[in-house]
Amino acid sequence: MNKNVYLNVISTILLVSVVFIGLVLVKSIDLMRNRAEQVSKQLDSIQARIGNLEKKIPEGQIVSSSNTVQKSQEQSGGQADVKPANIANLKFYDPKAEFGGRLIAAVSSETKNMNYLINNESFVSAIWDYATESLTERNFEHVEIFEPKLAESWSLSEDKLTYTIKLRKGILWHDFTDPVSGKKWTDVEVKAQDFKFYVDVIKDENTDCAASRTYFQDMQGVEVVSDYEFKVKWTKPYFLSESMTLGLSPLPRHLYHAYDGPFDGKKFNDDHERNRMVVGCGPYRFERWDKGQRIVLKSWEKYYGKKYGVMPPIENIVFEVIPHPNTQFQSLTSGMIDRMGLIPEQWINRTNTPEFDEKTGKIEKLKYPSRSYSYIGYNLSMPLFQDKLVRQALTHLVNREKILKEVYYGLGRIVSGPSFIDSPYYDQSIKPYPFSVEKAKELLAKAGWKDTDGDGILEKDGKKFEFTILGVSNHPLQERILPMVKEDMAKAGIVMNIRFVEWSVYTQRLENKSFEVCILGWSMGFEDDPSQIWHSSEAEKKGSSNHIGFKNKEADRIIEAIRPCFDLNKRIELCHEFHKLLHEEQPYTFLISPYNLVAQSKSYRNVKVFPGGIETKIMWCPKSEQKPVPGAQ
Image (cartoon, rainbow, N blue to C red; front, side, top):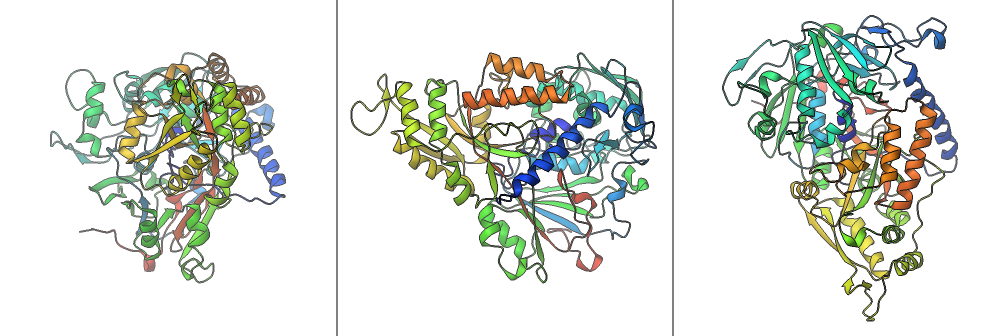
């Protein structure tokens, strides 16, 4: 999930642990029995925090930069329980920080473009998270609270359908030279029109924003009042309208609509030169892209947050392209890069060295929760997977306990549904189907699959039970998981072929739905809206997140009931109902909710782990330990 655009938080951190390993961070676990009590307490805390969402902005209440989000008088007895602040999360920045240095993070593959609206790769969203900002930012410690960033103040109408936003003045876009026209742009101010442009681009049917557009279906649009004021209007109540509205970011019109006439969505998709750069208004400016090597961001000297005390201390953020995890690890231990996400095998077997010693080592390990899960998905447009008995049988043939133990080294939890396992939306009473070859054979026989010719392979209507699962090349977890699954499938008379392809080919196959079975991962936001992945309206769209083509009238009914539901308890009840339905239908074999495993140089100070993960913008490095950026002139 991306502080700049809340919806990108949902598609943003996508694929860092199990197709998203190396792109998304992974989560911490404790398998001891007393963990159950700790989780119970955490659930109570999370539910209480989410419960505050319904009360944060009472009708007509104004929230400003000098008076951050307050609880209603009824809730707090007329006294605000949040201290005034003029900009979000100021208190977490270290006044002793020394400016300079770099933070180099490894990424597994290079991207096709830098336009995060048409590119869902998580590290592209991470680049934009550094380069631009949204109207507000969630409090790092209390994620239910929104605090001012680009917005000076905001208010909500009594019918909860219109948000009025007032912008700060003096926020500047990054200076840049248009790669097509050669025109130089300097000191261009961010205006209300840039927010309208952002929404209009997403809602344009010609732009490749199908996954994001789902969340905007009930947003009527943006009405510009003046250069520094606009209204965001919704056609109907939507429980995520607050976080989506306050998570809006501007989009530079002078970059993406640098031509006469109306905006052209198809041109936006195919504007390759402009899509190779990033122009934002945040603390870091896009400096260069060394093709096949690295992407470099540098502190933006005109960043408006500087005068408010929230200028990140680190001067350069670098994404170093290193395809193989072992090479990434060697680069970390040699000091060539500064942080990376570890796979479980590395965490367990390769960090027992002097470099990782808690007292004398130069690298620290950080393990913490991540709202993500991995899964095997079945293309439901294919006859082979249209019977739910078959899909249930396939799940019974995936030995998740063995995968958790031997591939994840216990650093994760088996899941049975689509919500974050530690949230109240996840129904703890629904247990994952156990591994059982006999149960799988029983279900397959009921579905009409039998070995009639004695060759050990099931058949039905003259067709063998055979399929191909699509994996990602050089993916260390999938390379271990898929042969294990193949072996167990064979025990029930199923032929499972494995095909590994490059990530660019993989995503293209998903977009075109040209696959039989896939293995992927998904990252979740702070609140649940299943529409993007599971609603039938997304099943036929090219490039949508419903790439398996799931269609179910009852699921649609539940999803459509969740969207306008502001009652937390009722929403939890609906999500549990939806969890139960998916458990019965098994369109996915849900696998593991892994733990975020991060290794990072001890050179950095003010390293803090929050509910949303490690906040790198507040970290700093002493002058004596600062290193140069590779390839710097």
